[in-house]
Length: 160
Length: 175
Image (tube, rainbow over all chains, first blue to last red; front, side, top):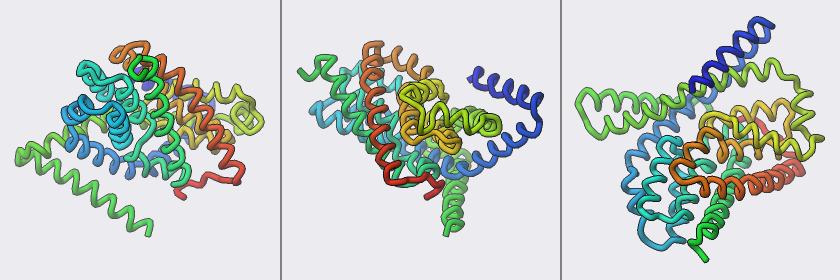
């Protein structure tokens, strides 16, 4: 975090020293772009905080720790697709799942979809790339997540 | 139409904020919990996003179109995918940060296949996140995920990108 902050400040200063006009232009682009996604971003944050309240960690853990491993994998990838959890929540949660003897296959499906597929981020993605591309990218990522999960399962000796 | 849509969204956001404030005043537990969630997520993004957008702005002002085209454009070779993966790995923050960067690269002439690779890589192999992941789930888990997912991301990105390029698809904001 501090690194990112320092790099940004440093680059702005360097840029300013070399070319004031270009720096101002850059800042204008930054403000404009940020302003455009501000509202969809806030909407997403509102939804994430409400959904995370409705589906707390315990519920996720409970559902994924018993039952069939294939249906659990699918369930994990669906839960992972809806929510977009930041890493500082997602990985400790995955750690809990591991301690509860949830299979690596299920955890893999969960974390990969968490990172790659986002139904809640879809409105923002759509702003940049349009509905079609955003849709295709998300579907593609979902399939990748399932493949990764199955291979993880095989390599951890959970399937064969 | 567009404005009406925007208005609805602003109303949703404002009523959410009012709900949280009222919850705090009346000590309504559920509301406070949701408010805490909101605060945690926003804090994370509010620190990262301004930096990201400033860097994007500087990138657009300074980097020449030809430079991006040469390394990531139509005539660039397979090495462009390697660049995309490295760039993705170095991206801070969640996918929301990667999206405007990808858009910027596209505007500067990077090809679609590279853009998709970048987005995929930014989602799955950000370096800071990976260290975190390995500490919770073990190095083996992380290595498997990398080795399997990166080639898949590159492969599907090439498929999706070429399909869209063949159809003369152009990215237009908001369409």
